[in-house]
Image 1 (spheres, rainbow over the protein chains, first blue to last red):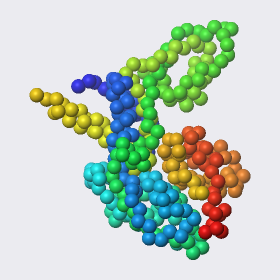
Image 2: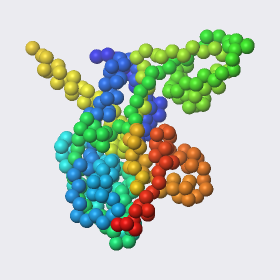
Image 3: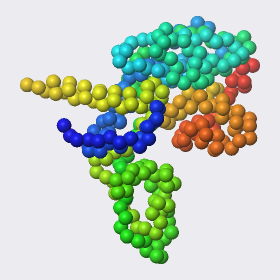
Length: 247
Length: 64
């Protein structure tokens, strides 16, 4: 097995930035795609409307409910499992995602402050909804990762002094740079290399096999779960392939 | 009608920020740029969702 190495640059519950060294571009893209399409999350799929006297149609409410991220304890459920949620709000007031009550306490709205519909006097919304565990491959509302991306780590090398009469132009760069083994996010110096290296000529080159991932989740689970589950799906598919071609 | 739950482009959940944004930047007199920065809405795709939104529930409610 190939040697690889992971360094975290930024690590929060729902957002992280980390560097992976020693992987091929194909493998880096494989992880990215697995995070988007292969890690399942719960999302409302079927809605049974009991009463809807709001200004929105049932279908519009159904769409909004489907987009609400639900906490997904992976490992306790299998793909295709269903959880039933109920919502009953009477106006005047606003129905929020936090008003959804599930029959399983492990599943609830990840953000409780999403307005579903504003209800006026004498308006009421009562419904029952089935959330199903599916992958992003099936429907985008099941994507756990949001804006998952990666870019090359960029090595910056000092190649001497800047010409005295050189144009005084900014050198804008985004991502993370590596200078003598130090990892520096470009936001630290206003994304402008001339702020960090004044009067110096620098050479910027992609570091081969080093990728900086930027991962956000919609709140269904934390970033750690998303990344480990994504790599696990890659592994399980690779093993399935090994078995399939074994003599 | 209501603020979309997620950003059309990247899929970040932005609906939860609407009420605070509306109170501070629309009804209040704070700079929308500062409010969005403080809410942590970073990308311009997500920012336009809040900046360009208009609530229509009050407009259609009388015709129910």
